[in-house]
Every structure is written in C-alpha cells, then in structure tokens.
Length: 119
Figure 1 (cartoon, rainbow, N blue to C red):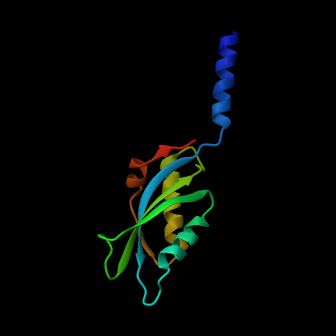
Figure 2 (cartoon, rainbow, N blue to C red):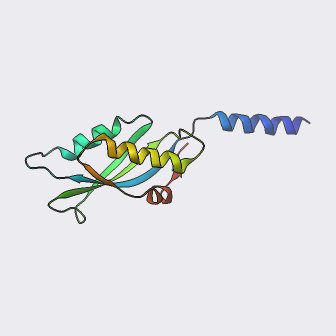
Figure 3 (cartoon, rainbow, N blue to C red):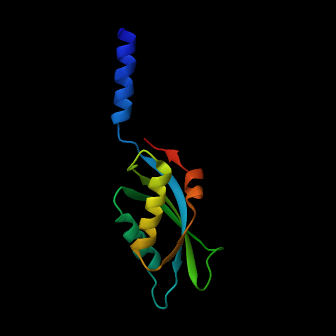
C-alpha cells in the first residue's frame, strides 16, 4: 500500500509542475523602405505575447529577398491547455496578429517536429 501511495504522490507532483516546451518556427517579415530595425521591433512585439519567451533568432539570408525577410525563431512556451497542437495553433495566430508586417509563419507541423520539453 505504501508503494502505491508513493507512486500516486509522485504522479500528482509531476502533474502539478509547470511544464515548459521549446520549439522553432520561421516568420516572414515584409520589408519596408528606410526601416532598419524591422527584425528587432517585430521580435519585441512577439516577446510581448503572454507565455512566450524568444530564445534565439537568426535571419535566413538565403531565403530573404527584396520584399521579405525570413527569420528563424526558437522560443519557449508554457502550454495553455492539454493539447500542445492547439496551443501552437493559437501561438501561430497570435504571432500573425502582433504586427501587420508579419506576412507568414511556418506551419504548425514544423513547430511540432522541433518540439522538445525543457522542464
């Protein structure tokens, strides 16, 4: 009986811990004339989304062109529901809404393929 109670307490403790996940996505930012800080400004807006922490970002020089800049972003997030896929869909929508200059975000399946549990 003690073993069962111990396992149950460990299970409950694990369920109550805050879980943090990490994933990657690529965003496309529309270029504008004379604006040198488009990437930094856009990343600052993304950092303002609740429960998201941008860890790394890197400009994809090969994929960028005269009309858009591609940026690879790695971010951590705290799940909001029991479904990580629906959380990632919601995060993708929030990223798209944060600025009119963001014209695209990679598919959720890419985020799922790079998903890892941090904590």
